[in-house]
Amino acid sequence: MHKTISLSCLIFISACASVETRLPSVDPSAFAKETAMQESQAFIRYTDMLTRLDRVSAKILKTNAQLCEKTRSDIGARTHISKSYSKHLRQAAARQLGAKKTPSVLMVRPNSPAQIAGLIKGDVLLNKNNKSVSENAKNILGNDGQFKIRRAGKIMTLMAKPETICDYKVNLRMSGAVNAYATGRAIIVTTAMIAFAKTDEELALVIGHELAHNTMGHIPKIIRNVILSGFATRTTRPFEAEADYVGLYYMARAGYDFKDVELFWRRLGVQHPKAILREKTHPMTPSRLLSIRSTADEIRAKQKTGETLRPNYIKPQ
Image (tube, rainbow, N blue to C red; front, side):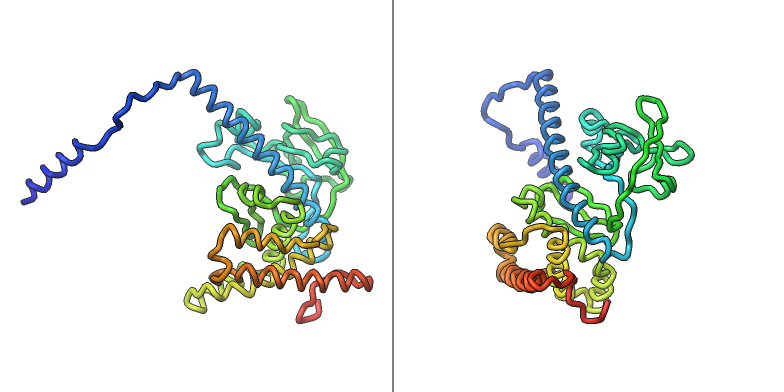
C-alpha cells in the first residue's frame, strides 16, 4: 500500500509541467546593469520619501513639544547603518547610500541647526570617547552646543543650537501596504503610505494621528484592554477615534492647512471598501471623515476667538 503511494508520488513529481516555448536567454552583464539601475532608482525614491517624511514630521514634533511629556534635543540630521535596511537590500544600501555597520549621516534637514553648523552627508557623529553614535544619542552635545564628528578620517568640532522636539523617532519602512503605526516609542510610516498621501497636509494628518497614539499612551492601554476583553478588537476603536481627534490638533498647531483634509479617509475607503461598512480595529471610514470634519470646525472656532489650540480633555491637563 505504502509502496504504491510512494511510486505514485515519484511519477507525479517526475511529470511536472514545463513551458512549451523557447525562452530568450538573459545576458549576465545586462542583468547586472539592469539590477544596478533598479536598485539605484529604488533608493532615490526611498530618500525622496524619507526627505518628505522628515520635513513634515519635524515640524509636527517641534511645534507640539509643549504637549509631549517626552522631549529631546534635535539638530536636524538623520543617521543610518546597514541594518537600517532589510537583509536583501543591505549591499545595495551600502553602494547607493553609503550605509555601514556603524552610524553615519544619511541626510541633513535644510535650515536645521545641523546644516547651519556645517554637518554633511557621510559625516560620523562621535561621543566623548570618539565612538560613532546615532543622531539621537544622549549627551552628544556639550553644554555649549559643541559636538564632534569624523569626516574623511579627521575629527572635527562643530557647534549647533539644538531644538526641542517630541521624543519619538519617525521612521520610513519599505512596504507595499498603505499603513502607518505607533509603537509607543516611535512612529513607522510605509513607503506605500507616503505615496498614497498626495499632499504634505495629508501626510501631516497621518503623522499627527500616530503621534497622538504615543502621547496619549494608547499602546499599553490597547494591550491591556485587548487582554482583559478576551482579545476583542473592538476595544481599540475608541483610541483610534481619539488619535484622529488629538492628531488633527497636532496638525493645526504645526500650521498645516486642514481644509478638506478629512477627504483622505474617503479616498482610503474607496481603495479599501471593507473599511466603509466594517468596523474591526478601526472605526469605519465614513465615521472617521465626519468626526474629523467636526474636529476641524471645533479648531476653527478656537482660532477665531484666539483660544489656545489644545484638545478638549475630560480632565484638566
